[in-house]
Length: 270
Image (cartoon, rainbow, N blue to C red; front, side):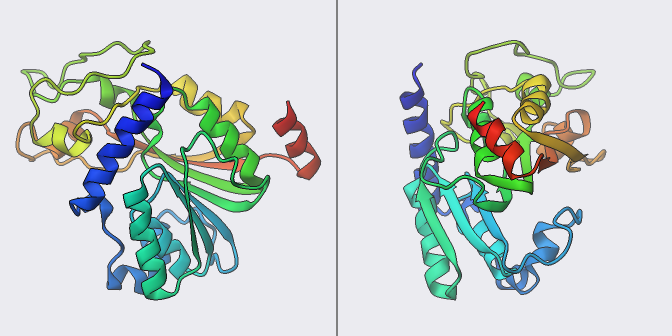
């Protein structure tokens, strides 16, 4: 499968989701926009107010991420491959007169953005849609200022390896860890798989070496890590929360761009 085919497939999936008003494609609520930092920075990773900061919301169209960071006082650029997702960002920017710029491109190609342009890069779960995270991390490193933050969330490898139907001792490993092909879609979709996999999307498993090591080798230092808690021990069998009791679905990473300007320039050119 060539790159263009999976990009086009995943673009169509998110265009369809945005047009259908999927829950993942809804702008922030009035209540959330009244206290945006409380919503986006529960862990305190941003270090306080972000007024005047330049924020990139990467692969984060849909009107939610961009509106929250802009409402917190940042100048926001949002990148996404889906035109329909970005239309939601345009609408919320116009309706609320928020400083939001949109750019339709893939997360691996940020050539429309300048070197060291951003103080903060925010990336929700999305690296699963590209076969390699290394081009993504290289581009993020290029556009992030020295000392800038890269806060990203990813699907844990085991999340994409495991079955969605609980057996006697839990959820079994179904797919190989070392692989260069997309992870097959669920053979028997259920409540858990519908929450964890976008219908029709092409997804790739990324090993811990690629996620953590790749980020470090691209010029970042990992400062913190969180496994967002979705587990509920008394949840209904085969539900999202039941599976999350056995398999943490996501990991959230806080990374900081290394070096001064000269060091960063050398890393970009290397």
